Length: 305
Image 1 (tube, rainbow, N blue to C red):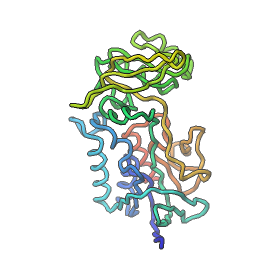
Image 2 (image 1 turned 180 degrees about the vertical axis):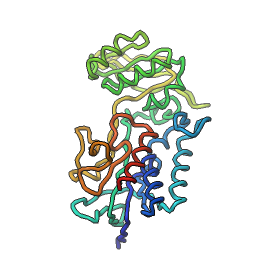
Image 3 (image 1 turned 135 degrees about the vertical axis):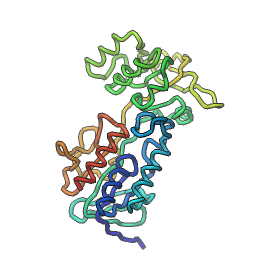
């Protein structure tokens, strides 16, 4: 038989946004419950060294940073449960959530369910993720100073990542399956005018090449979709820039989202289209997608709640 639990505040998601929201809510005696979802800690648990989070002059491992955030929130009374929310009812308060076999109700809901980077889905990509394969140039470009890198994609994200990487890498090759970029005109022009960027048109990544001891990327196998020709290219890093998918499936039809599925919030606020529901972190941020900005909006969401 399913159990039912009532909480003052429930936070959906256990990444930088969720744990920061929990920290602030707990210190305000709101006794928050965090339903961590299928990946406690969020995207940072898939990264290795994090050098751009304030307070860690020597850097910190992504999973360690998330564990520290979680412990800090728990110190003030936050409870964390490894459960994924499958559906919600936001039509009336208290709000109702279903997670596993249990039902939860709450007076206020903070959605911090994050976004998932889109990946190619090939075996070698997963094998070298965090060892030369990344989905965030802002996070990892520093590790590829004076190295050869490839970027996969053709939209604004791919163009922006390519241009950012030119500040560090010796050369950037942008791989796109079509014969023109989907990026905005100004970004496309900048990419094509940059001497440090080459473009491989009509091409897709077939395989990421590497060695295992220690694990690192050594190259990339590219297929031309028109000619069928397959070529191997030396590479030190591969950046996937094919977009992010906000984790909002469990909210379908109940809350206002933009065309890409990111939750929309009121100006200068984390308030959503449903009174009493707040959103923070990557699930409402299609632009910055950084741990520090996620944590900042987590603080805001707790204060708003």
